[in-house]
Image (cartoon, rainbow, N blue to C red; front, side, top):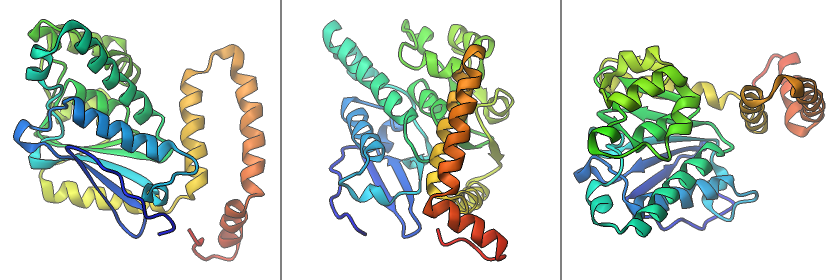
Length: 272
């Protein structure tokens, strides 16, 4: 690798394979990976490293990021004990830091894939909503339980509503009801469902193989374009299309674009 500096993280571990597949583990299994301040800070550090250009860390080699939870659970949400014991001022800071982490995760330039097992609650639900692609077990349990705790889904609400729409997000947020993987798929939160862990891992391997066939810079620009397309107002559509045509031309004339076009015409695989 061209960069050797590693990140120092708490309750988060990661593995970067030679193909550029970065697997990030929420690593607090004794608490079903509930997010305390230290875990949130570590995720923020990691996603900031992925967003940095150029990055001084080994993560600059990452082509895509897979987010998972240790111990059979993705994430049970926020740490309730930490929330209970924090002062009002401390809780304001801690909660907003969680929202900042979601913002930087949402801005991650490479494809972000979440693998959803066990508990996908509260903040874990929010993490799933900022992901580009999601795979889940049918048995996974999803919920926004905040109101049943006398709380509100403060930082995740905008991301949840953006992902699954106003009606579905309002119903889940106001009732705190749990849903299974099949219901989450129907809402558009889950892209693919699997019966067991073995088939889930196989599905993840197939997805990563598909993603690695795409050109790295082209994928970054495509991710940016699709997100802007959802947010753009109708009055700004022509401007967005103008920008897209310029970006297409630049990409086609880049080293990566020329390699992709030449490989296609020569009926061979591109070099990335």
